Length: 294
Ligand code: GUN
Image (cartoon, rainbow, N blue to C red; front, top):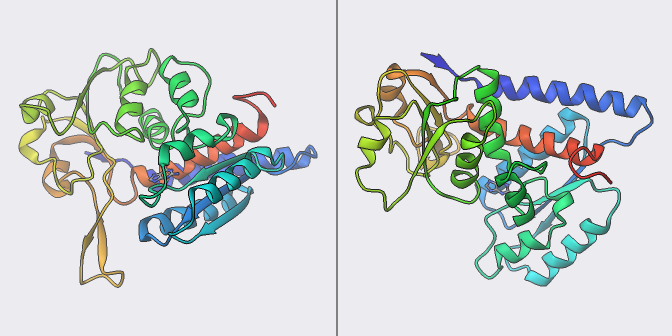
């Protein structure tokens, strides 16, 4: 069994990006600039955004954080977005999700200029990705593909089962895994809450990508020997023995499943660090105009 080290892989990639930025600066170009809008004080969102700001420093990017309280109006967010869309100094920006219930998340996403949508959530980027055109690929799926590539995990012709059909992970990662590319070229099945006979399907999988947000859902009896498992779950479960009062739990019963695997990602330290890394990569692509010429 090989443990896929997402932290090390992400650190390698961030070093590659930092070297690229140094070259840009040496040529007299400006540093890439990522902005983030954060609403409220959700612990998970705070951590994600803090890690994104830290990653910007490591990569040599400028970063700007715009914060609002939970009761911010939709119009104030739309005004922020209009300003960032028009600011030539900002290469890309994100609005951290989830947003409070009184705000229409889809309206917010669609207000972002797709050429600055480094999260890859805008329908134009989603659509372009699905037909294999240059675009900003959403960060978690792109990070998963990068891990498969860097660990040389064969995907062509393999049976890949995706657990979960979210717009952020399940749907886009299924799209990328079935695309005519390497990694890709897999035979993909997407399972969700209405799937019947789920364990019969997962037992046939060469690769399982679990993105349900249900701690320990995938158990040893649901997988075959030699499977590759990518665990995208990051649920906070109470743990009084920790100073924080919680620990992160993946969707896979790691201790019992890992011995059956060829490759498996841990939680934390697997997919999580790669997501942020993909965001940095998209920001670099936005700054250089490599996807959408400026
Ligand atoms: N919330 C959970 N994951 C993400 C992400 O990748 N981007 C944004 N903007 N919000 C998230």
